[in-house]
Amino acid sequence: MSRPLAKHPLASQTLSGADIVVQVLADEGTSVIFGYSGGAILPTYDAVFRFNREHRTAEGAEKMPLIVPANEQAAGFMAAGYARASGKVGVCLVTSGPGATNTVTPVRDCMADSIPIVVICGQVPTAAIGSDGFQEAPISSIMAPCAKHVFLVTDASKLEATMRTAFEVARTGRPGPVVIDIPKDVQNANLVFQGEGVLPIPGYRARLAEVNRNRLSAKACSEFEALLKASERPLLYVGGGAINGNAAPAIRRFAEAYGLPVTTTLMGIGTVDTTDALSLQMLGMHGTAYANYAVEDCDFLITLGARFDDRVAGVPDKFAPHAKAIAHFDIDPAEINKVKRVQWHHVGALALAIDDLHAHLQSRGFKPDYRAWHQHIGALKSQHALNYDRDAATIQPYAVIEAINRLTGGEAIVSTGVGQHQMWAAQYFDFKEPRLWLTSGSMGTMGFGLPAAIGAQFARPDKIVIDIDGDASIRMNLGELETVTTYNLPVKVVVLNNFGDGMVRQWQRLFFDSRYAASDKSLHQKDFVKAAEADGYAFAKRITRKEELESVIAEFVAFKGPAFLEVHIDGDAGVYPMVGPGMSYAQMITGDWITSRDALQTAESVDKADLF
Image 1 (spheres, rainbow, N blue to C red):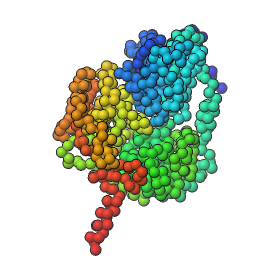
Image 2 (cartoon, rainbow, N blue to C red):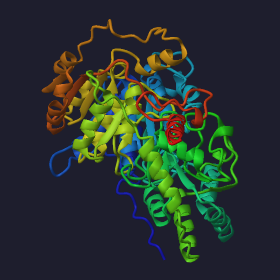
Image 3 (cartoon, rainbow, N blue to C red):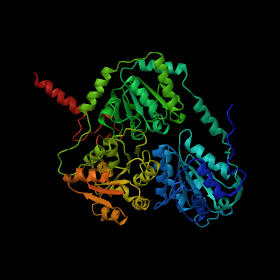
Image 4 (cartoon, rainbow, N blue to C red):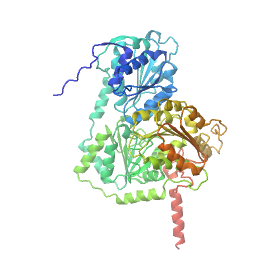
């Protein structure tokens, strides 16, 4: 018989609503808060201050430090970076009105990528709601379409249960952001602390329990086994759900046991070690050519925590055209058959499902022979490898990333903004573990990289954290350079400067006859190195010559404190491969330095003709 939980030491004590908010944060394991103050949230900020004064660690550090950014959007992305790097719920604490509306973008970003954060917003007093009071905004209405759930606490007696329920909803099932809007009078109310209790949300909990109970049956395992036995060219297609569901260890065991090649989405990077022989790295619009060709050639596509989004399956009818069957594992039933019809599916916890399937196949003595498929994959990797002009006089962005990667060896946490630099980082960095790759996937939010790196550094102080950014993206949250030095974080920032919106220019070059409308930043006057120095960076350097690359990057990576590096890169460097809008993988554009399948076949035909 299990023992009853110990009574909370503060149970039955009278606390203010603000003190209850902070105590629940502590109870939920919150180790850091990111936020910006303001009138409507001041009672809770004061409660955080008093909590930290009374609960210092043995070393004298604050138990739950409050990190203040330059703006609230960055606070939301810091919480997201913390959540992505740690797997825990990130916390953001902001005031009403503009403070809360500034977090709409990170909330939507987290919803799109299934990232668990809790955003706590101050609100005008309950009696003033709807009166257009100072710094009032209808946050529950604004956030409702963007978040997993929104709570407006108008009954102070429900504050504690609401707080605990918010964390439950954020972290369970398909994770996501939860917003709690708390009027100032609720924060100031005197309440009896219960030390336990959640809101009655029977529908959500019933659906969650059903998904968690839904283990693979013997019949389902046998049906999957039949599909796998009939396959000669199976391929695992793995998405962000594998990382969010902590299923990477199970997937690695499964892939290694049966020799199953693996390709991942942008959000699934790190599920398997990208240097592993079975890894094909990323597929999709800017995936490796060999991964995309493997999708073209596979006869059984096994989809794990991925959703066939438009950057992967842009033309669903032409995606995996030779697959005789597609299997789909997901925790969200809404994703099954939403974009691509599948022949087998399972809705449930991914790690459990993979382990159950693995046990079933082992019990049946399943030992496939995929040597021919492995040889084919090896040929694809060799013939269609990532490449670029290595003899160019200008600095190539790929070379910058390769140089950093040689020093970090797939062990660093890498965050990015959005654009060309994001795709180059995804292609050319190695990632040996999950939660090392942090990027805004579905929303594609410029300005994500720097604040996400700050959140990640708090989550993983043992890791090197590097923000790979673009000159356009970093401008969006440039104020957070000062946040790095304020807290003396050893975050390393790289700006790949091509003096413009590089990805937009690439599209304009390919599809708009090189009309660079509003994407050229060559006339801008920003001196990034001086900006970094003004914000207190002891290491702030610029590379303009190819010969400087190796030595300066080595110095940059080795530097112990905050470090900033700007690199002037070739403005014409593109992201290839590229699967353009309306194109199938067979029509992929590989650029000048990656061999396409059509070019290879043409060359082979010429070689054969020379024999006769």
